[in-house]
Image 1 (cartoon, each protein chain N blue to C red):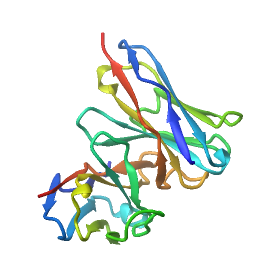
Image 2 (cartoon, rainbow over the protein chains, first blue to last red):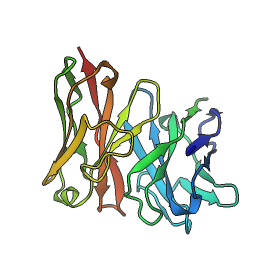
Image 3 (cartoon, chains in turn blue, yellow):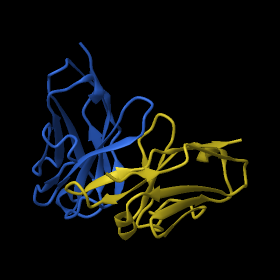
Image 4 (cartoon, rainbow over the protein chains, first blue to last red):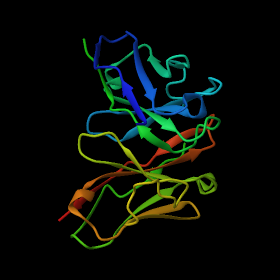
Length: 122
Length: 111
């Protein structure tokens, strides 16, 4: 079946980096994009950016564009999100999701990963 | 930057129809599709409505979406206890390089 499986929980110290993986299965990876969304404890959803599974094009929001890098490995159908210079404000569950279509970041997200908890604490 | 405004809470009794609104402060939002997501407690969000009013396969027709200008609505008819969840609208904002924006979420309680 179509699914996205994310890597396990992470605990990081302030200033460190974290890299979360998202392995896709059950569909043609390069026919879709992958988007990342985070949710701080008790808060709403926040968009972290998008990467095309077809050509690797990315789109990041200004708030995090200097600290985030999204990549894909099409040979393993895996997407990655790296976030640098972590602070306590980055503590959240990070979700990857499949974006309908491969060419535009504004498409809907129809399949979601299970989420990865990232905790930033000294 | 633009935001999407949702009521923080909504409620209804089983069988009723509940409507959740989503309004944008930017006129540009009216030109982009609105999507709706349902998040059950402790789970990942799920796509409920896309492109303003389209239901993905498997989503009951009790859920419907509409949009007029810079506002959108999600209607849930025949309310059921399992509909108790958080609901988020989302759209695209062309400003600041372009980015996806989410509403603040509406917690739906089935009384």
